[in-house]
Length: 376
Ligand code: ADP
Ligand code: MG
Image (cartoon, rainbow, N blue to C red; front, top):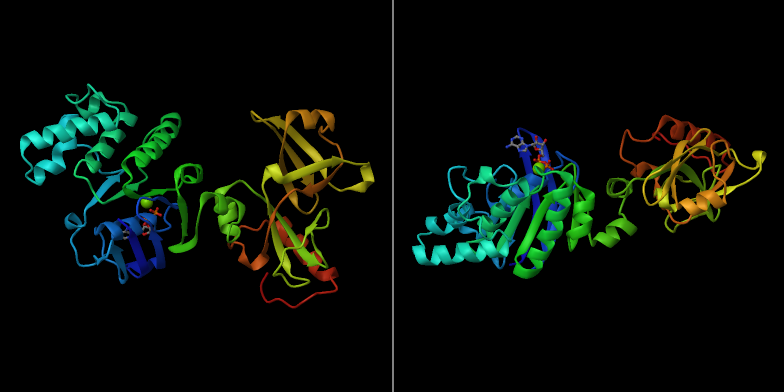
């Protein structure tokens, strides 16, 4: 069933937690609500579920506005981190619980429970109690319990938050396959960007109660709407610069100027470590110096110190590190194979380094396109 959320707002004790959020989840999609903790993701999910009333806005499930429909009549299945299994009930009884509440006859319940146990791959464990299961198995029981009454929408709030990293990774792939089999419209909340990007059809980024971007995982990664999204979804180098002619100029590097920025504008260049290219040069040809080279698995991490910019991180294949003899102390010219460029004002407050700020002031002082700015 399609979910449409329109202009939702919610405050708790005068503090605005959800700000005018609108999005649509198409029938059969698996969508992630992704963002830092405290951003309002759970509140949005709880409003869709009917566990919280919005101050403004509406929720449409299928064709029906549901603001006044109680949670239990919305046809929603939940897996919330804190909705633990009933400890004194077997796996089978946990899974059948929702059906018993609905007063289905025992034979139907038993049959559906078996079906669900098969669906989540827990054959033979129906008589176990939750404490006799691993964390990953318990979460699969929780999923089976949510799916048993055939909900029209499935909502998951940090469903794998309590299990360790390896199991968590297996579980998320498993959830994606399960979703492909069952096809129920699903929304899951996570603060883990790799989890969201790996399994969701669409990713909705929420920060400070606001929707920052709603896109496919690939577009979130390749075309982040703003500096916040770019940084949230991947490790990035922040480089302060300024638009000069056809380029953005950061002093030690230049990059083609993207459309839509004024000449002279202060910009923030965001480049992922894999986008940073290093070229060995003579001592006085560049101020940048390799500071450290370390092994991080499939590639080498090369840290480069740039006076007035701080330390940049590059990720470079080991063979290239060897061929270019990138070792500490080596002078390098830096180029970017790709980068995101945003007006400086779009940077999240408080995150620009003091070195970057100093650089920007200097650039401003010497720039022919200097403008008076009340705030940098
Ligand atoms: P997220 O799931 O993104 O971590 P939440 O939606 O849980 O964010 O919370 C957003 C903000 O709202 C937080 O500051 C949280 O403390 C506050 N909050 C959430 N629920 C309540 C509530 N029932 N009463 C008061 N404040 C709440
Ligand atoms: Mg939450």
